[in-house]
Length: 78
Image (cartoon, rainbow, N blue to C red):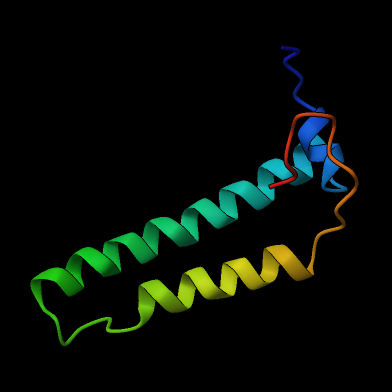
């Protein structure tokens, strides 16, 4: 198994730095959504759709705004 910092980013049409920025932004949004979900667990009237709407928006962004090249043999482009 070959380990590379640039192989996966290149497979989605990004440089290493671009991919890191996108991943950090997605992670930050997911972190905020997870906090909203935890608050919703305690206070069900708060953040009723925040978690699911965040996941839907991020999924839509990932699918529609990325160029997907053929992934290397044995790997999936995610």
